[in-house]
Image (cartoon, rainbow, N blue to C red; front, side):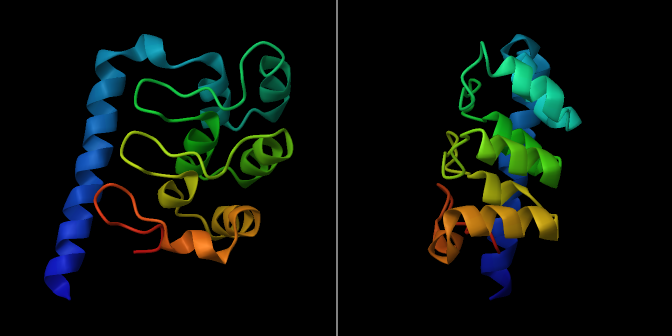
Length: 131
């Protein structure tokens, strides 16, 4: 009901605020691969994965694919998956890239990669990718 939805919204906001505070306090944990994913820079990603593991996670467990999903870059998501990124990787809150995107094309790419059963995966707060 409404209380459950309010709880999910508050839990999701808590996760986002935690990430923002962490990034402000620890900017050094953002690696160039994550920055390229944030900017949707596929050529840079192709070069960077020669020296940085494609599934490398920051201190909170976010990978380049999480970052690309959060910033709604479908071309970048496609490229990362094609290059070997794990679309089912979770961060410390149990969030997958599918939990983080709000773009329909990004959702379709991630669902096609992970399968429909993955829509029911819950984060540590009980939220599924499609609230």
